[in-house]
Image (cartoon, rainbow, N blue to C red; front, side):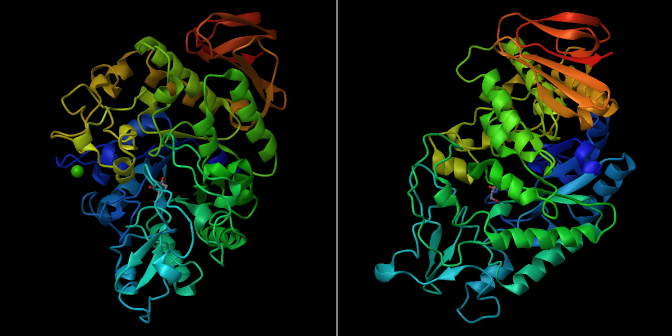
Length: 540
Ligand code: NOJ
Ligand code: CA
């Protein structure tokens, strides 16, 4: 069994986790300070979002030096300390690699844009204008705001356009160029030599584009709301999942496999092309896993839809590849907000729903990813207009951008939630007085303690880590599934509704945990579920 199939990953957004030097911005030393906490919680892998040199236009997803730490986050020796501390506590560390694009401040791009014939002239994707000066094709930037913006930016110096799938400060690298590829592999080598256990590959479906740069055959609709799909498959096909990209991913895998310790690779694959693309990217010899954005975006409180969603993942992956499950990340609204949208939910209901989501995440057949703060039930934070930091958020305004899910981790009820001694780069959520680590550690019924218990149960329960997944008939609004490993069986019951339900599991068992039940309680046949309650039962 590959270690990463049984591991639980935890994403740290380093700007927002812990500020160690009082400048209001989280940093690497801050993460190191909190390694004990992560080990107490019981996760296995820390994934740290970008901390590399960057002008921070896209908060680190615009890199200007792949092989150095941005001074805001510390220095290389801080990173080495972090890895050492984590490894001491048996926690693995993975980091982001952003190879689809660099920052426009990267010395490679500075040189590339200098002339049409310098040594790096071909390191990015440059094209002449079409007649009348129009961009080379009709592709629309993934970071478009309230109106469509081209993926091409005009450069006055070269009198040419360059391609940028995301912001115009993030020019796309030319993966066709062998020197570019060489540098990318050198950067991976650098971090592997600093002890990382693997990588998350940003925007990995897009490395190669349509070699002819043809127009997309269908149009783009402007977003009705953030993160809604606006392009169909014929559109995405122009710059996603190209055969050359799959070959590049195979080369990455071979390279990682030449290191001892089985390095893990997690591909960020665009959701809009669905499960097929996830599968394509994670077949043997490619990425270990694809980050399951599809599940994250489609999860709702409609039990039947959720059942279908999970069945689709589980059946299509089967024995072919290994799925992951995700509730949230730094690009999406907090899970509690998404699940309670349009509902009148008080604090107690939100807690129940956070626990319901946690139960799903940690009992499905696949590797779970926890986004920092999810384990205490953090919610979206309102960001006043003058505090908007996310570049895409600015373009989307008055619609809401991504800052809302990137606010400081709530460690205690102090003025800046124990994240910093000074005003933080994004405002702290006003619910910090009750939603915080210190408080929740003391409260047996907190979301945090529920996560901790679930993580422990998962660690000790073979069916939950490795077993097959099967759904059974249940009353409307309830999910009833089992995880079976040889003769061992674990039952999971989740009530997605605000009314009481009863399920007959037709067997005898013992409650391992539940969001309302007492651990150790015996069960025989009929099980009552309170509103939004989840129960995990070991069959005897
Ligand atoms: C995906 C990342 O998750 C997101 O935060 C970033 O803006 C884009 N890729 C561009 O790198
Ligand atoms: Ca700091």
